[in-house]
Amino acid sequence: MQMIKKLKRTVVFLLKITLFACLFVIFFAIFGIDNPWLFDFSRTTGVTAVTFIVLGIALMQVYGGYAVGTQKSKPIIYSMGLATVITDLVTHFQLSIMNTSEKKNPHFVYETPHLLLLVIVLQLIVIAIFAYLGNFIYFSLAPPEKCCVISSSRQSLGNIIPKIRRFRKQYEIDEIVRYDAKNVLDVISRSDTVFLYDVPLPAREDLIAFCYQQQKNTYYNFEMIDVVSQGAKYITLDDKSLVMHVARDLTMEQRVVKRLMDVVISLAALVLLSPVMLGCAIAIKAEDGGKVFYRQKRATKYGRVFEVLKFRTMREENSVHRSVTDDDDRITRVGRILRKYRIDELPQLVNILTGDMTVVGPRPEMLENVEKYTSELPEFAYRLRMKAGLTGLAQIAGKYNTSPKDKLVMDLMYIENYSIWQDLKLIFQTVTVFFKASESTEAFHAQEEYDFDEDRVENRRKRQAEKEND
Image (cartoon, rainbow, N blue to C red; front, side):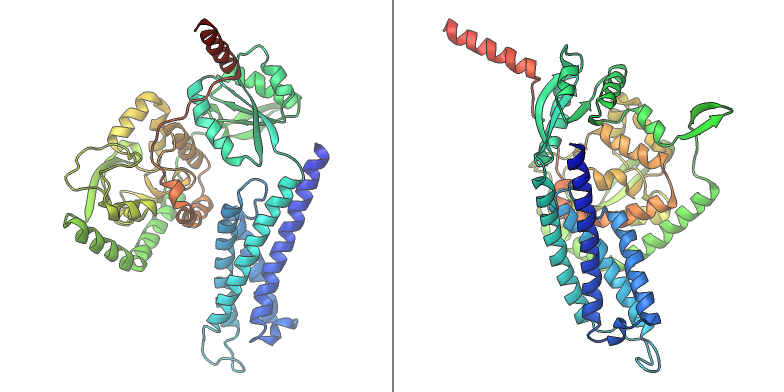
């Protein structure tokens, strides 16, 4: 097993290096047609090469990169494609600047955009080939890992099993048991990978220790202690090893920089997206003649209430404030499109400009949901330590129907690990939401029911007994 893991890592590394080399060669080979000096060892060549390599590697880190074996092929294509296109645009612009000289162009000229388009098309084709080829090779080296799912209730099984089964090439669910079953350690011993979900903390600690001893791949869901540990540091006090967690808020420097970013980004976005917003307003008005905008009270930092501004996506006569469900008849035809691509949230740029919201932060929830979720999860109030945001970790990684607990974990992870660099990363990653629009706007729906192995055996025994009695 260890040999196979090493082989997989080696294959992924070689494919990653080969893919990046191909993207680099395509860029230089195509632009070399009109710029033959790119094949010489010149200052222009050096600066252009460094720009492409440094920016390309940085953006691939931001968007997830060539995650063969852990992501499906389409998300890899989206992330690699987006990183590569931005790298091409910036490097091509830099090349145009470098070519502004007495010999080449006396004045700045944005050169050969048709070659840029050709470069992007060829690179996207190569990325798609490497994404599908990489996953094919990776999963051909070994069958899916045999997994066991250990949980505390059928409801918890309904939360985790559908997520695991979306990655059938990675994981094959072999056994499903309760955390307190007599044979739980035997089940772990014969599994490759262990999923622990909603297991009480004392029992989870024991099971993780056993998994560590048996060298099993282990996945478990976050609890508050795990969130706190994310913002903690390892220290030694004299000769004692301790974990230090310091209660903190944004520093004065962070608040100033974050506010400046909010003003600059919201102003720039309002100017650039004004044609899109105008088109949305016309479409909403044309459909039913109602109001274009919709205001709703939401909670922001320390529970302060403000009115969030959105494009109206529901019938104007609707007055019921509740989460969206599958086939919700309150949504208009235009509204479905706006919600699918999150365009209905663009007017919140005004909320950011006025200071009610920030670009990156926890999503502002409806007041009804805040009250409901806080009564079920008292820790939900902790997310109000940061001003509400237009985008954020929960908005990018989550969906409309992501559970309140999972949203809470994502928001607290953002708060505990806050940095300006993290904000910049999340702003860049926001673009990926448009590529998974159908998934990210998935509405709430009925939860599937699953049984533990011992429950299935008992149910089969009961059905057999009923047949015999009949």
